[in-house]
Length: 215
Image (cartoon, rainbow, N blue to C red; front, side):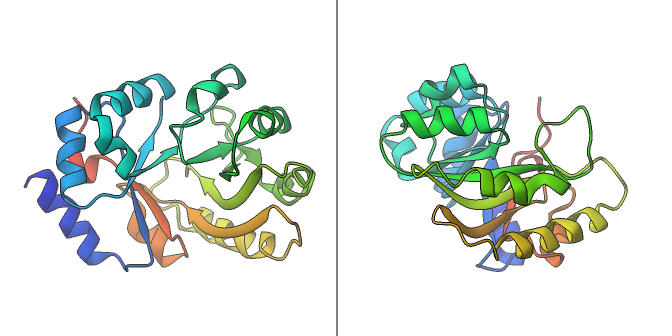
């Protein structure tokens, strides 16, 4: 089955109100072009340099889709991502928020990355501190907090983690803050997106199920 068929299959089985973010990690220009021709509108990049190179290679086509940064962003790379990425899904510190807020030329949509399982090997805000962190971002008027994002741990069934994320998402929506407008719960990947959607995800991040295994 080719990229077109795989994307169409997933799109047909997923509700229209669930956004499919196609992950381009280690993918070629030809693969990404095929995905775009299949109807992909949103792309997720894990690595800044790889994404910038691909953005350049795609030319005008790159401007027709939405670019989401789903990998860790170092403060010294902030200038590189502005003007290319439409959304940063991995905001996890005040220092990064300050760097983004001071350098963007227009309001930037951001998601809070949540370390849902408290794993030392992963980035993200500690689950119990997410609401407090959101409130601490109230001063940054150039950032619009539009979502929460998590990378679930490698377990046989991540359902309980997804349930917790959905509960947190609903609680955070109650916070009254000018730069907060929570619309997206970004969770679920190729091996877990069906469970994630059942538990409330409205944005899934799919790579191998569309492109095949990475070479």
